[in-house]
Length: 182
Ligand SMILES: Cc1cc2nc3c(=O)[nH]c(=O)nc-3n(C[C@H](O)[C@H](O)[C@H](O)COP(=O)(O)O)c2cc1C
Image (cartoon, rainbow, N blue to C red):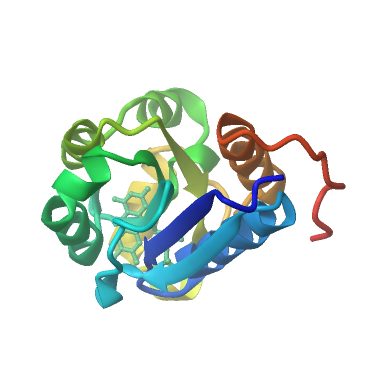
C-alpha cells in the first residue's frame, strides 16, 4: 500500500562498505513496498521527485566524505522540503572503554551542521569495515587508545535493518517482513 511513496537512497563510499549499507537499506525499503532509487551522490540525483531521501556517507577524519557534504549543501533547499534521514558509516559504534563511550555519544561538528541544514528526521552511525591491512602503526595505536579492539567487517546488519524499519514505519509501512538473511 506504499506504492505512491518514493524514496531516494544516496551515498558516498570510499572503499565500498557504505555502498553496501545503502544497498541493504534500499532493498529493505523495497520489501516494505516503497519505490526506491539507489544512486551515488556523485551522480547528483535530483531529490525533487521523491517523498523521502536517505543520505549516507563514510566518515573520514571525523567528517563526511566531501562528495556527500557537497551534495547535501548543493541540494539543501529541495532537501529541506523532504523527509530526510542521514547515516554515517564509521568506527565509533564498535569502540569500547571510557573514551570509546564518549566518542559514541558525540557527533562531529561538520556532521551536526549537516543535520541542521536539512532538519534531518533522524541520524545514526553504523559500524563499518576497518581492515588491519589498511592501517599504520600510528593509526593502530590511536585506534587502541580510543577503545578500538577489533578489525575487519564490524557492520551490525540487524541494527541497520532496525533503523531502516523505523524509516518505513515513519513513512506509513504496515507490512512486517521477516528479517533479511545475512
Ligand atoms: C583514512 C580513513 C580515515 C577514517 N577516519 C574515521 C573517523 O574519523 N571516524 C570514524 O568513525 N571512522 C573513520 N574511518 C573508518 C571508516 O569510516 C570505515 O572504515 C568505513 O567503513 C569506511 O566506509 P567505506 O568502505 O564506504 O569507505 C576512517 C577510515 C579511513 C580509511
